Image: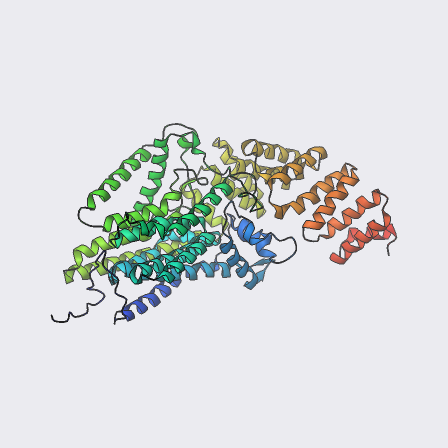
Length: 636
């Protein structure tokens, strides 16, 4: 038999189910060149992101107000490996945040955001290369499908949220380990060697430690088996995946427990209250939930092709919140989803391509499809980060099916996909600017949803923190005029009244917020702070309640606040107890030592009072009140 001439990357025809050819060929240089191109073009697409700032949406939880990151290794710092952040457990992600903070330039007392964003962009660029290599393996070396699947992944504007938003480090990081694990698993099928399977499992664990969404790898591995032609009825296929399944169940159960405000049987700490930041769809029927989840999945498919009208925030429809009839687009989405499912089933008679691509998409998006409410959004751009690999794979494999035997069609396919990639690049560069800062973020969201309460609350809170009280009040009052019952709106108005020197009105607003969300510790903290000015007993009750709900990292400050209230009530022993606790568990604060000295003096411990005031001056030599107190006490 004559030796068959090697096909060029453009000519290679995918053979689903065929064994992977691992021999190094001249096509290796095509892969190297494509990988370099992907890295460079991704950096170009996100070049504007390096000037972006931290945004007032979770970045304060992950970095700018998180002692775990800002004071890593110092006494009283929450432990990374046992402390969830924003009701999510992803310690490996947080370790990378700590690393960024330690190596960042410090500006205005905070690490500069450029290093955090740069890390996200670099991991995303590496993920694009991994997509290239994974699809190369899956398609038996189809250059067209591999390159453009990777380009769509790297350049799609729906992925900007996962890359430019510092808090979404967990997306890019878990995907990095997910893709490596998938590739290692594929090699284990090809080479039949256990080390590859062990490597796949180890990488899977790292992915789960980066974000619990990584558990979706388990059904994807079965999808790989099916693509390779392995029978899913074979016992060995299931036995080899027992460690994967057990790990997925462990992290899945942990995620559910944390989302409900639990501490996973005492293993974790620092949970704030219970999860109330959801749309609460428990009162809706199964059909309603299918309509909501279908809506998101169909919208993602539409935006894959036409990525316009993107928003950082897609709220649930008012009809859903008010328990009335959903708009017609929701039942229509369910019909479309059913039709797509039927098309996928029908396609199995001719090809595996559609089922494999849509299966990958479905398995990786299903957990955030809003069948069970997750957060306050009906959909989110970041949820498409990994799933779009499946959609791109199916579309491009379909294109190549028609182009593979015709050079003219192949050329046209390359040109069309090149233009589409250029279009995505331009859209991504524009979308990166949405994440420039907090104001641009929420202003963009407001353009899409001008009366949405949560958007107005977040924009108003930004204006309030930046001292633009009139703009802040305008946002909150507009939300109230729309009859929006949103706890964050009332919290924001409370803060505005507090800044304007009206603590009683501020307390009224915080009371309204508590009525809507009684498990949010910060609301009690804020009301307690306002009540210090007119009802100190109420202040003590609020700080006590906040101590039950807020995470350990904030309890030192709470004990200090309650101690101040006790001093005003002349309950000096209670104040002393709280100051002792605040000093023991928290960072040293000059004010705590000084005020504990006041409590000791009133308990006839003059020597102890002098020692505490002297310690306050050691911590802050410019503390004028401590200097005056020490002169009165005769300590100098």
